[in-house]
Structures are given as C-alpha cells and as structure tokens.
Image 1 (cartoon, rainbow, N blue to C red):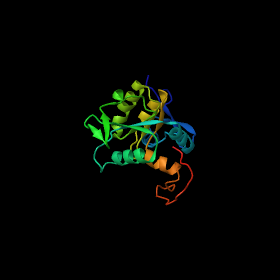
Image 2: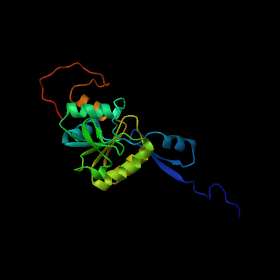
Image 3: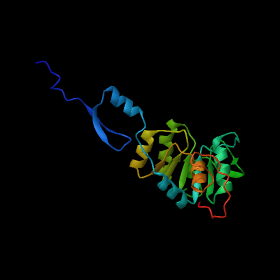
Image 4: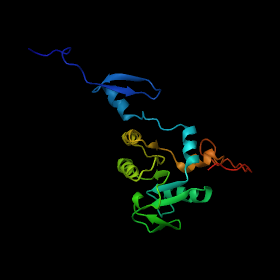
Length: 196
C-alpha cells in the first residue's frame, strides 16, 4: 500500500522569533531554513551587561595581540588605562602584550577571570567556551562582529553568561558616560565618580 501525504507526519521545528513568540514550521521549509540562518538568540540586556561589568574584578582577553593595529590591542589599552580591572592577555605566540606577561592559555592564568573577552573567529568560539568551562569562569564576552549562535546557546546551557557581538570597551565607556549611545566620544567632563 502506498503512503499518502497524510500518513507521513512532517518533521517540524519550533522556531523562537526575535519578538519572543515561537511557532512550529516544517523543518525542510524555506522559511524554517531562513529563520535558522538568522539571529534569534538574545543575550543579556543593557542593564544586565552593566551588572556584569560592575561585578567583575578581572578580565582575560583571549586572542590578545601585541600588534597596535589590532582591535584587541586597543581594547586592552583602554581597559588598562580606564578601569580598575586586573587584565590578563592570552596569546600562545606572545611573550608580553602592553608591558604585561602574555599567557599561552586560560589554564595558565594566576586566577579564574570574572570575564573572558574573546577576539577569535566565530568558528573558534565553541572551543573557547569549552576552555572557559574547564577553568570555571562564569562569563564569556565575544567581541563586536563575532557571532556564533549555537555556541552562545551551548554556553548558556552549561551555566555561562554569554555576551556576543558587543565591544567590551564601547560598553564600558558608554556605561561610564564616555560615549554617546552610538559609540562617539561625548566630550563630557565630569567630577562624578566613574562606575567600573
């Protein structure tokens, strides 16, 4: 006897939309494939990111570079000069970065950092998350322009706080009155004590 379309239950996927609603779609439908390729994971809110930065005492920068033209160097410089964080640079190919010892991996750090700031390509994020889990750090902050939704979901499922596609320097400066909401220098000079 031949199977009819009603005899075979289509495989469906539940899709979480950006507005918080979800719906079931046939897994092989063009819409399901399009939605899967789009960003649906939503990380911590601005208020939550501020809380993360305020609570932190130490930051490890994975993928830190001794090259002054790299964004990780610029972020490291900013954090050294504009914050009270203990900063650790992680790069197996460097001896020192910005006058500090560079560590070959997260496991070599003298303490477990509160935030692991990541400057690695998107395909490397899952292995970085595994390294973060191995040392017991609680927050992974993946830099601006780097996105791996599956890694973010995986990290959260293991109890990590994950921030992705956001610059820690921009966020820190914005929360402390040093940047306009769009990232421009406000030029504001204040006597107000800055919030770490």
